[in-house]
Length: 199
Ligand SMILES: [Fe+2]
Image 1 (cartoon, rainbow, N blue to C red):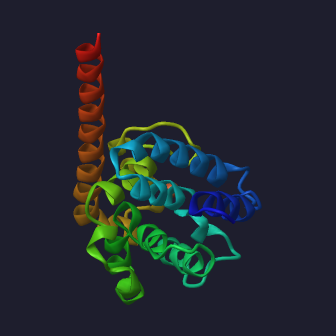
Image 2 (cartoon, rainbow, N blue to C red; image 1 turned 60 degrees about the horizontal axis):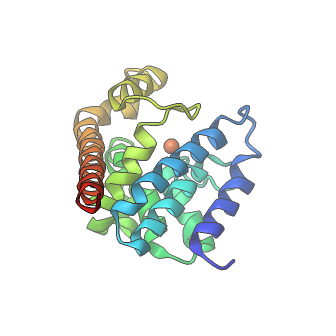
């Protein structure tokens, strides 16, 4: 495998196409990866590659071939650690979309210890991964982050760990989405003024 991006796409396809879910998880993943590719130019090239690789792999923990503890961010990260030659990809998978709050609500924070580097949950790179995931619904369609969070709460139920994590997790997820939207808008404005200057 010649680069982390190709490795990630191939591994994700092998694991998620096999799921007995009518193709939902694979469709979602393909769109999350496409959105990540939109945001990648916001980042230095090496980080952009990590972002897209992590987007391809962020939900592989749902595969029964990968599941260890039944907590998909860490299960996916552990698998990526063994199969994708970039440690940061595993860290981004483990921390995507406020996973640390879900781990805490489930009493699984100890599983996050190998993936606790701040740059894996804070900053433009993890923000962009959370933006891509939380503005794409489980079917792969675009969705507002507030609707995505509401749908998640409905799906998991009011007594779920997701519901317990929600008061702390939701503001962090929404902030990551808003920050990425602002960075994208800023990039458009910058390229627009460059075009005007060149005209
Ligand atoms: Fe996802």
